[in-house]
Image 1: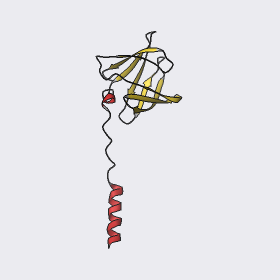
Image 2: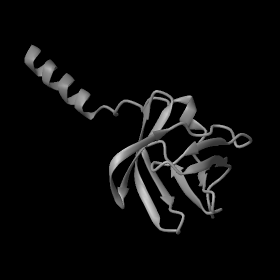
Image 3: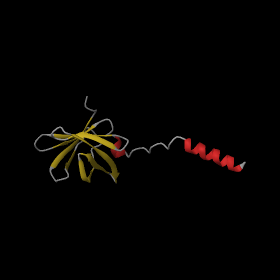
Image 4: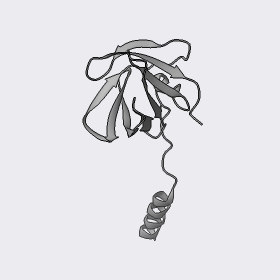
Length: 122
């Protein structure tokens, strides 16, 4: 009888709902449903859209599609680009407030202005 109870309990646990995902860190939550723009000195911009599931999509300065995975390292968001594939991750702080942007540099050192724009493209 005890073995039967253990088997029923194990089966019930296997069928249970998966644990809920943890709340995203505050520094990234404001980007969900919005556009993060990297504005370059020549006026062109790259756009990315982060999703709570750890993925992101975007458009390069030339309008080419981008995609990858994101993770947190301290207060920085680290982007690993998978399409087209890049062999490294790039980490930086992202703006959390649409009213306040950030001055930064891209992964090759070009100065950029980071801006959070409310909403997603239509």
